[in-house]
Length: 397
Ligand code: GDD
Ligand code: MN
Image (cartoon, rainbow, N blue to C red; front, side, top):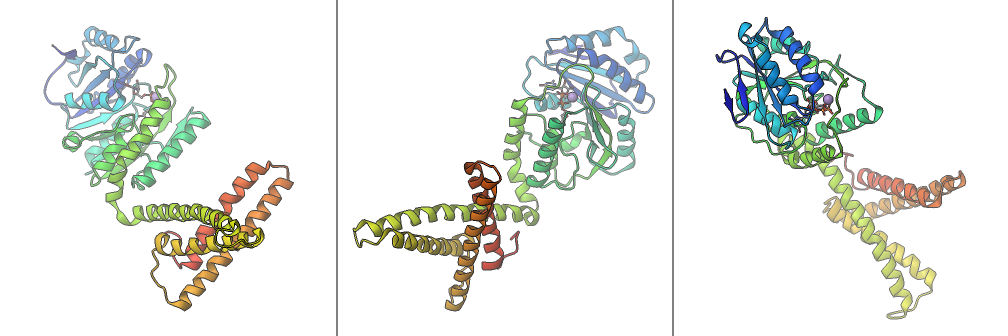
């Protein structure tokens, strides 16, 4: 049978499990993988395997066609059927996977890579877990206890850990250890009402963010880098990732206001504090120039500089009080106390900046870098100390 490039062989009673395997240039891997999966599960479950190939130049799709044709096993063993979906174009991993899932008939769907990074030995464990537990999403996990990664360069590891951290924090899935796994199972029903709208690799992440009520179990496994063929990961896919976090952000925001908003509030206050700081530089500059210009008065330049500094500290204080920290207590005693505290902390910051620059330049660093570092450190300390001591807030409020 051939429907728009789809071949279906074997018995057509509904399988319990559909395994969706996206492929792009996996000629060396795909047949050994199909053999391996078959040997691991044909005795325990009735399953279909759906290979979704994006017209691989190395002929992966045709290889699977021939494999199905030349092997009577689909009919003989009855338990495992194999299909290929030939997509005409490579339009992204998520799209390929979703197209595969749209052909799936199993109660459960399992997604996995074709390059043996996802060991077929784990599939029976996934099946067992889904049969024994009332869970929705089962994740084969590199980062849960007992999981590991073999054969990745330090750079790829760091990239993965960073992406993982960003996803868990900013999209608010802190309890999932490996939300970026490409090896996971879920009931087919679960995604019937889910709209996927990101590009790139991270379909599980999108599922987790949009199906927040799903129960999740992670099963550890050792991810092993592919032995044959090449990873399709590239800069474009990393940028897709950044874009999808951006797109998914609002789903994280609505999920758990408490833990999420804390860091959002912290960063938005920091941003306001630094904006006020920048406005202070302008105030400082223009007040000093104005006072020495003779337009109203002609001060000695050292006096006008001093007044400029005081003016900018004062305007910074007022703006931070009202805008950054939203503090509306204007009783005189309170105001004076706060102003003095703000003044002390800013002076402390200045002293800190001076000593840092001195220490760094004297130990052989360039002035530009030393100054940059010192400015960053002292403005962060200014922000945090004023937040805690002057405006009496907790660090994360
Ligand atoms: N049909 C199709 N179309 N398949 C694709 C495409 C595509 O555009 N891009 C990649 N694939 C297939 C590959 O042939 C392979 O079977 C699988 O998708 C994963 O691609 P790899 O290129 O091997 O990805 P990876 O090893 O770098 O990344 C893996 O680990 C990531 C975790 O950091 C994947 O499992 C990712 O899903 C996972 O997020
Ligand atoms: Mn891979």
